[in-house]
Image (cartoon, helix red, strand yellow):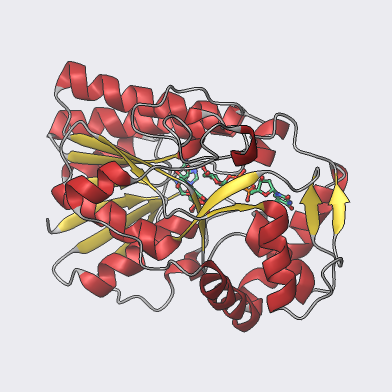
Length: 342
Ligand code: NAD
Ligand code: DAU
């Protein structure tokens, strides 16, 4: 594999993946196709060697630009998406256009040129799970985590659009023999995550003398994975995964939002009660939990960042050191949240 097309490579997870490929795969050249929406940022690719990475500003739903780039690629990894649940509740339209029509456009081009395709998806396509304490096996019994066999049951416009895209990939594999794989990952954290998302929002709230905000009672559980572990898993699946297969990526990182905020407050030297409870998210998924044993057993991948507080400490240090990266977006993001009472 010499020429990789990474869509959405100027966003949080895509940019971390591009950095991973540049660092560990010296023979690969990456072309990033990114629309540079509010969440995309050239600065996320700053410092990478020009001979290794080319940024093309464009839309994955634009068949002309997609055709030109896919024709020259050995593989496409599709990170491009509208990614924020709260925004999808306010205006679903860009989610349908990018996440569904955009993926369709990429699939058609990959089909035409016989190019390998990998779809970056989310655990949210499976809907949610009850809290551990409400389950007979306390979260470890059969059916108490998501597996590749779990039924699709998305809750929000965002997760429904991602589920739709996954269905398109599966149909293109079966009907047209597309050489494709899908990975559904749990919640990522790490550097370059846009300040609207839970962890960077709370860190930058504290750094900008605002109080952190917890939705509802803060009992909802997310399964956290460091973005570097996600990048390594995607590279493993892209190069060694079985065509047509779905892989779930997770690092056994279940924490309630209240616990995560508690860690952040402690690591940043704040009192344990220095936050506000705000309006809950409509339709708020209760718990996500990934059973990654199929990926682990079939391809030998294992997470490396297994100490969540160490990962959080490193992430906090990154936001402290990169205030210029987030400061410009912060007021606008918080003004948006104020309108919904969050
Ligand atoms: P992000 O919002 O930070 O980045 C998305 C990127 O896609 C941005 O650079 C944006 O400019 C680009 N983009 C949006 N619309 C585009 C279009 N029409 N054409 C080209 N580029 C476009 O998102 P993220 O958190 O980095 O998520 C990346 C992918 O990973 C998404 O597909 C998301 O569904 C998936 N995912 C995210 C998580 C998570 O925890 N954040 C977990 C699992 C899966
Ligand atoms: O599970 C994977 C998904 O994780 C990805 O597919 C999405 O792209 C990504 O955004 C993320 O979705 P979530 O909705 O889980 O992430 P978010 O950061 O928006 O919220 C995480 C949890 O924190 C969720 O339960 C809502 C809560 N929350 C969020 C914000 C922004 C708060 O309590 N306070 C907040 O200020």
